Length: 61
Image (cartoon, helix red, strand yellow):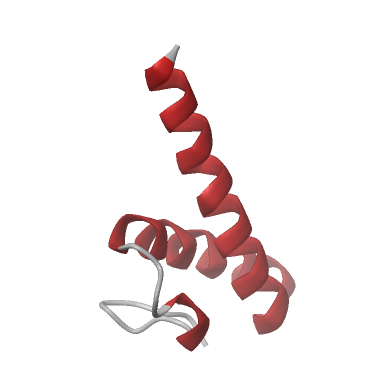
C-alpha cells in the first residue's frame, strides 16, 4: 500500500518532517519495484537519513 498526504508508516512517526517526507517518497518507489512493504519502509528511512546527512556535510564543507 503506497503512502501519501500525511499517511506514512508508523515507524516514521517520530522522525523530523523533512526526513519523514523523503523516506515516504523513497519507500513508495521501493514498494513499486519490490512489492515488499517491510523492505520499502526500512530502505526509505535509511536512504532519507543518508540523503540529509550528506546534504548537511556538504553545507559544512
